[in-house]
Image 1 (tube, one colour):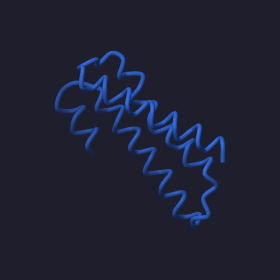
Image 2: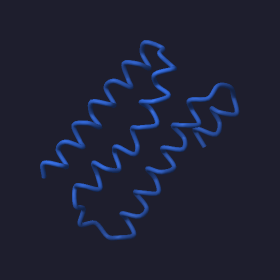
Image 3: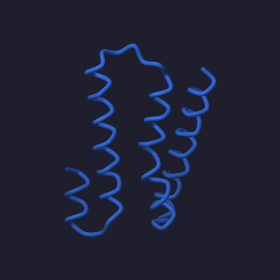
Length: 87
């Protein structure tokens, strides 16, 4: 339980920092914080010891992976980066 709490708190803290950086327009630092969010969420969720069906767990893990790829794409500039990120 303690590891789950630590990972969840780390994720929440990083999310707050990333949102603050986004509000302040600090694109350079967000190249570190934004891509770190989904892997940290995966650690937090993975350490929770889910009893969900294995197919559901795999699907949720895949969704977080695609979300991470979209987040990284959205760090780019221009229409192509935007369309890739939201796709």
